[in-house]
Image 1 (tube, helix red, strand yellow):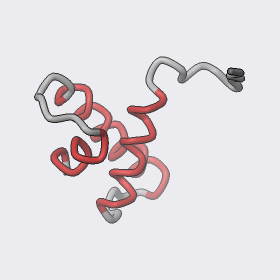
Image 2 (tube, helix red, strand yellow):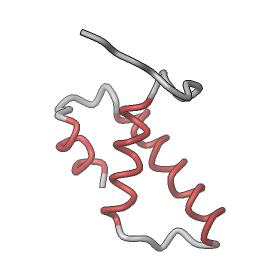
Image 3 (tube, one colour):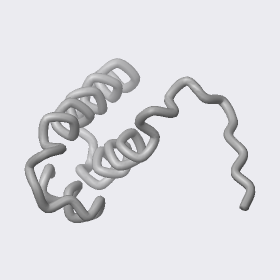
Amino acid sequence: MLDKIKLILGISEADEDSLLELYIDMVNDELEELLGHSDVKDTLKIKMVVFKYNRRGTEALSAYNYSG
């Protein structure tokens, strides 16, 4: 799954592997908590990890406007 996530994000180096693996663990934990299991298709987990990766640094924001 890590290789697919890196491909989607355009990451070729191992620099972000630890962070991405942390996000994978977080997604599995969230699914376990919500559903009682984490047996969900990898495509959903990948989408959730990519979303988390793209939102890093803005987790606390409820809204963000960009003009330009």
